[in-house]
Image (cartoon, rainbow, N blue to C red):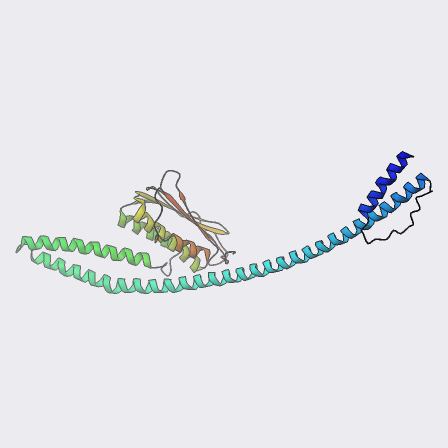
Length: 311
């Protein structure tokens, strides 16, 4: 009998904990005078009912929270998609502006290069011819004047070479020339002006099924000019190697030198940011790395059929 009394007490306590305070018992509980087995079964039944009632309420609350979180997540996804669409649109506009700006820059460079060549270049050549005539006239009459005129002519030759280098650097690819032809001419002239050895590997030209965008070739040619300018100004190199690899989907220009490498960070104004900006506007990339045997490597990769780069 004590065993049943203890069992009933624990069951009643469980029932009190399980059922909420305002819940009414669905069945009378005539425990007094009833058989212990019947009382225990009754208490267990009510405890199970109370537990089920509590679990059902908790389940409803959990489902409600789940629906609320799902709605919140869906709203956040929609907002995120709208932000991504806005960013993609902004990036497309930015790429288009960069391409337009680069076209304006190329036109202005061409105009300045043409004026330097036609005006300043011709005047310098005329001045050199006049000085040469004066030098010949003073050969026997005044040896001192002959020597001074020789020094002036040598300085003038240096100025003429500088003007030619500036004009060559400012001009885009000349009409009628391919990227390969322009790269070969520019590299040969650069090596001659700066006294460097060079290696040129243009690889095999792929048949793209149609003419390639000249603006794409202009971006690569500008990258070649900037890279060679950095070699001349910072690398202290004796040799430069230029490689152009063309596939059905990609053009890769590599400029490698044997100079001091990347021990010192490049200063601002070295053109790297400009190269990256122009390449990104056509879906390309620019990478600067250390060479395997010293020096630095600039690698520019461009799609043969450029599309705006992803945001």
